[in-house]
Image (cartoon, rainbow, N blue to C red; front, side, top):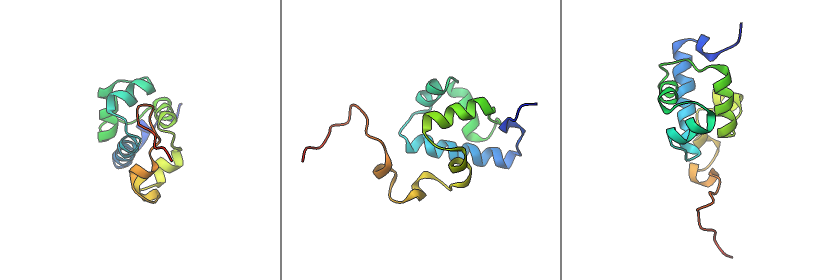
Length: 102
């Protein structure tokens, strides 16, 4: 029997989905972008984020990898903004973002 988060309680699935959405937004990714990078569809990802569908463990670990967040952080952290400062100070630079010159 494989461990899938689809086996979790509805309350836990909603919390997991809400935290997943917060991390996706924190990383500046659209639903479509994260879904594509993690090998799933935007419809399924939206369902995960809403807590309507339990997340399969394989998909969960792909999402965590793309978001560069640990399972521990996803489950125990109230959200990325609570890591200190605003989300903007923690976002990684993107290639199209202009660099500042000193």
